[in-house]
Image: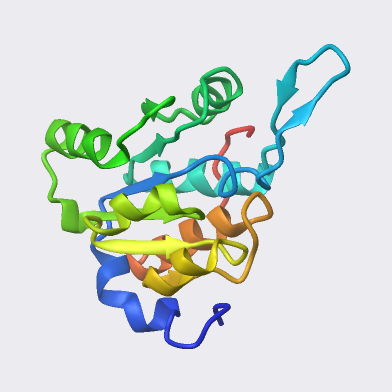
Length: 182
């Protein structure tokens, strides 16, 4: 059961079954939204291993993943490389433009894209993606616009929740393991 009535995966099975690309924001989706600073001024993010495993499984099932973020590269690129994510766009002002580049390269339609976001800078992608997903702790405006709202918060298993739901909707076995460390 998802966080809001009318925003559940069950009501979106047809869209979930045709997802050919999962697009993600980073801060607030793959992380808890916190940006941590050391006394020296260095910043870092905390990523969730369960989310990483979900993305690994999804890609092994043949569904590519894209990261489109306004955040600066660094930790984002390291995490994406570790997870084998090919499409990584950071420091992006216009997320929809980046998405159009990716779908052109993949030869898919925008209606086959699912995007997970949490804040208003994701709304331009929500206007064009075939399936829109907000994490449970997303901004209200984003949750109101989304097709699905997760039960879990960003950085705390929301991405894994959706990765597993997409795989189930497409007939994949979600109980097996894939020999990859995340």
